[in-house]
Image (cartoon, rainbow, N blue to C red; front, side):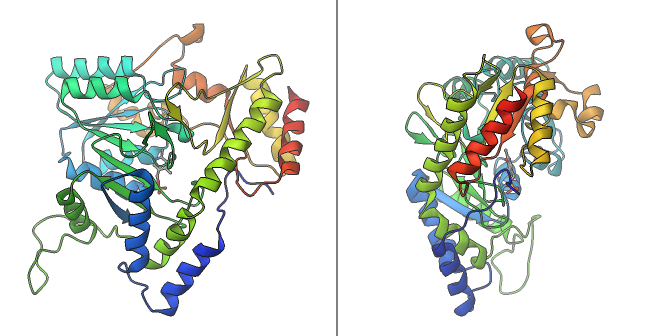
Length: 381
Ligand SMILES: *Cc1c(COP(=O)(O)O)cnc(C)c1O
């Protein structure tokens, strides 16, 4: 079976994990945690980093740091994994979903501005904008930041899929007020499950650590005055992340080679498949190679043929604004986006969902694997 994006460990990951076991540093404190955070800061030029049990918990901490609370609104793209927005619900705040723009597939600056304008005119407090860099491709950050600054709303960068991606030579995760990474099993590097919160100040990091370790006040006994969480990553698992940071560049190069191979061997065929565009001034880690087929019938046949041959491919994220989870919200607040993109009576995110397919992007794949996959896709196009 060829999976979409399976874990790809290196000997150093094994070594640091084993070392934690051998030295009995198995609790959520120790050298692997310190060194993993240090390596992330060194690589991305982030100021401060805090390792967490997941990317989702890191987003939740970011919202807590920004004081997101009941009655507030948080803006998020519609085309993303539900984990981007679940923490908004944990805080009893209300998400506002924004359509994709057609080039990077990320949050559309035009509709972001419309949403902020609407909220301002209707006295709705927007306390954060969550920006996602889908499949590693950075969003239109210059436009997004200008708009966010104008309305005075902080940005949380969900860079779960974009470790190593850059916008104008600056790393994804460090472009907003707060950022996060994920090290879930399918991400570019993995700690089996894990995440990282990126902050610009030491006070924010300290507050996040406090919240991530049950918010224990500084007393000799157990004393609590705030709601906390058990969100700190184990030192054992941090060893896996520490080890893989040493091969991150190799992994990115391989991901980009895989993407280029698909583009060269697939997209020339009568424009039947198009790929996500790496816009000027951006560098994508190409976490997943995602293509857009000229119609959903070809896309579905390709998926079926790959599946028959034990090869995993997947649809893009299903837009959140058409999920049952969000339906009750629409009595109150809305989705901002196109309603008749290319005469389909659909939004752009729905259009992408109908035609898109994520292709196998595992960094341990061989040239032969890729040739086989390309042949199977071409057979159906
Ligand atoms: C994976 C992912 C997350 C969640 O990360 P976990 O570590 O699985 O909690 C959040 N947002 C996006 C866009 C993701 O792809």
